[in-house]
Image (cartoon, rainbow, N blue to C red; front, side, top):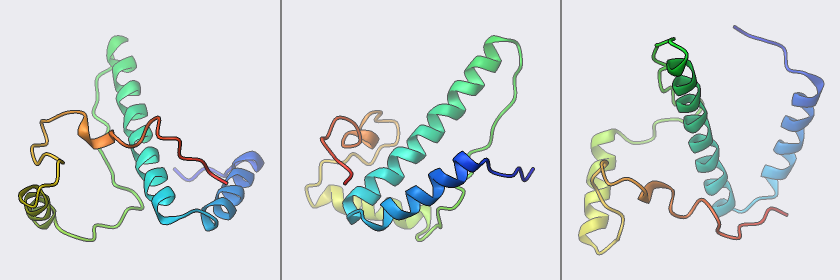
Length: 111
């Protein structure tokens, strides 16, 4: 399913390319995480809406354009090492809430 983009969407992508070129690394990191979080929330919302209307199916999580730089095992080892070094980020995936602590309401401004 490869749909053509509208002129408005092409304009938005061109503008985003320009603005991304002007952003700091921290701003880029937060923007990428916000976009991924929003995409996940949209997927969950669509699944919930459809389930409420009697349509059940699973939408697979695809990590799209994000490359896998390190394996899941290596990532978990890094988390555990950071935790042992005194970092406050928990290593238990069931500890809900920490994954987006710094994404909302942080006065980050794009220039």
